[in-house]
Image: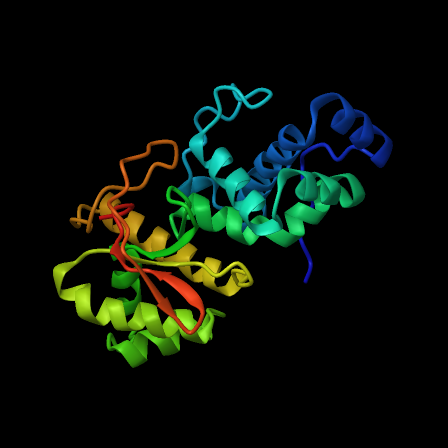
Length: 245
């Protein structure tokens, strides 16, 4: 897969070692997280869908949008510890994170991934449900699961989401399930979410009442309590999401 060139600075290993020695593991992994978030906007061309207010004033981890922190938490969860993540950054640089995790970064920006709780969740907002309907997806548990699997979603996750959407869709609420650590978000799913988000935004522009407010990433609301279930060794969140109503 080819990736567009990143417009940000990519220091060489000597400079990375100097920065890591001076600033520490957590600070440099946070830097990798912020870099990856910014690159995801370039890679997927989603600047028109994202609120970038505060990016220019974000310096050294201060006064930064909340989704930078959310991406940092995702990397710590995915890689194990800040030290392990910083070691990858030292060895392979920002480019490694751009290629490996810009899908997940875009997912956080677009509202597909939510890491406000103890583990990241994959969320199906109402506007994404509406997109599936308009695309001719059969809105049954099996039909929803088949569509999500065609976009690279794991079979078990797709089946669980399909079952929940089929149950709750009449109530027009988003649902969420926990994202297994071993699962990587497929870029085809991100591209489908981008199409859905643009379609939903365009409806707002021409005056069609949308399902709910556009999610602004640096605004956080209190998360609702989570009920957890265990199924086939994978913990799956059993809640109704409040990210995009």
